Amino acid sequence: MKDRFVQIESKNAVLEMLKEGRVVKRIFMARNAYKDPKTLEILNIAQKKGINVEVVARRQLDHKLKGGSKESLIAWVEPLNRISLDQMLDNIYKSGDDPFILIFDDVKYAQNIGAIMRTGFAAYVNGVISPIKKDAFINDEIIRISMGACERIPMIEMNLFTAIKEMQDNGIKVCALDMEGEPYFDADLTGPVAFILGAEDTGVSNKIMERVDTRLSIPMKEGIGSLNVSASAAIVMFEKIRQEVFKNRAK
Image 1 (cartoon, rainbow, N blue to C red):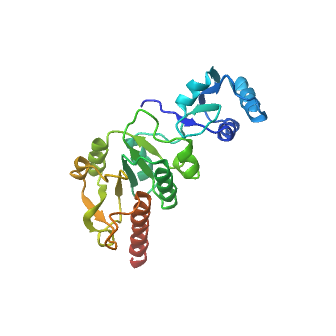
Image 2 (cartoon, helix red, strand yellow):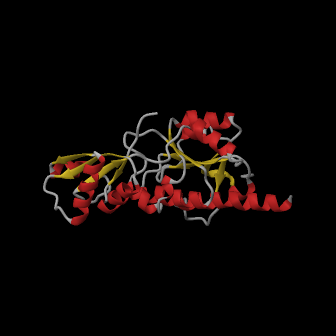
Image 3 (cartoon, rainbow, N blue to C red):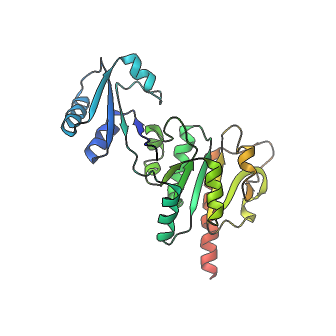
């Protein structure tokens, strides 16, 4: 698998990760950076650990920043939870659980991704799949919004068509959120399930929709086209939990 690194754009977060012993590939620091105590501590730890610190022009660092911050120091940190789909499924089945997976089909905004990951961790989601992108799917803003949950759920970056086929071959029902689908509370969401979450503006793409097993809708009052994707995700995730609890109590 190709190495992917999370870009951390907060000195506080970089310092904490260094203290935790996380694998830091490289640190970039602006040439005109103010050497405050935290920066000096980061540089001291980096020197002791043999981490490459690259001093760059302020403009070059600004070009690397993705979260809208004005930090003078950023770091590339190795993620903790990146595995293959085969590894993820093996681990899930070894633990005796059913696969409960989220698939992101071009969800764009960090606020939504972070909120979904936080809710997913609370709802016992045991895997997340996103398409392969040029930049890492997770960044420090998403880590902050998710309260760290995005580093506690196994994550895979892969072709979504391949992922859907492999999951269906393994008996996992693939469900897409779509306004034209059946009401989510009428669908059987127990057992192995994957929910596909679409882009904020366009929803799940047509080509992906053609490959799903079922479509789920959330009935709502007229005049509202759709809910925010993080709200929709939370509704169907906890409906699955409700159905699982009811099913277990009925045994």
